[in-house]
Amino acid sequence: MNILHYVTQKQEISPKLKKLKATCDAAAAVSSKTEGGASSSSKGECGAESLGLYDKDELQKRLSAAQFRVTQKLGTEKPFSGKYVKQKDEGQYNCVVCGTPLFTSDVKFESGSGWPAFYDVISKDRVVLKEENLGGLQRMEVKCAECRAHLGHVFDDGPKPTGVRFCVNSCSLDFKKHTTV
Ligand SMILES: [Zn+2]
Image (cartoon, rainbow, N blue to C red; front, top):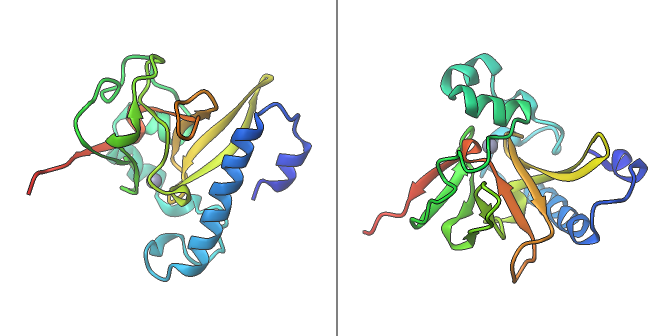
């Protein structure tokens, strides 16, 4: 829980993003109470940090060096270097660590920033937002709600209807193309 953290920080993150964070927090609280077995791994500690979900050594073997650095050490891939920046196929973007579905191609847009951008998440309880303050630079970090992998950041300059932009590292995502049945 980051509530104390939240009130003592300088308030420079926009109200729109704070509201989004509140919405995500509320959605996560509801789903952890009501969903019986949808995500067995995060049950138990009442939404407490479930950082021990994966063993770091195991992750280091399973993920590429870049994926590990981004998701576990808050890394950022170089702009325009990620494999999904220009991805236009229809499909779903899952968390590369735990497989939780996070974004769809329907809400992906070309932001020009050099990272994949989405204006919404599949469901607000899939991500956790966290205010970050690095040397005075205040941003809203986006993490996977299930495994706490670092995904990227969210900004308030996105297109309609949400007006927000989830700026996500390709390294944090695993794209699954829709297959026509
Ligand atoms: Zn995850």
